[in-house]
Image (cartoon, rainbow, N blue to C red; front, top):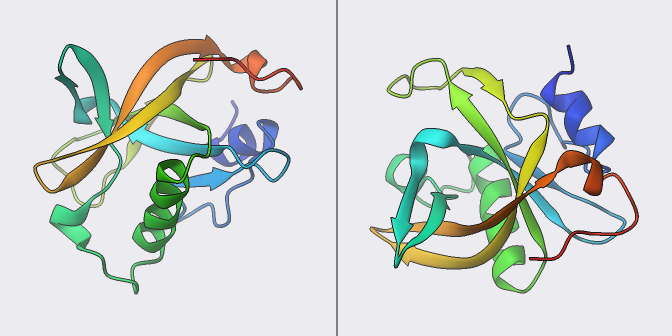
Length: 142
């Protein structure tokens, strides 16, 4: 069974730290690849979005390594970096910290625009694409 650390590495976006990293940047093209939670999706204006910040829990605390790294990733997306989301399912969505039950190893979402709602940033999930398309030199288009 492929671990998330191995999965990110297979996408060319190795995690900085397997324990606390919530995403990574692909050095080859600057794409941001994020872990996201299935239960943190909502529709805004008919479009599916997923919460990509955790200000409710962490604020903008620079001492929380995963959160600090995530805020840099979110800023990179806002600044125009392509983004992709790996959908994760929590064992218990109410637990803190969360434990991952599973993640989608077959498809990723292409990220679109970032929207602020309820004090958090939300990434539009434009469409699903096969993971294999991220492993090739030809990047999928939104």
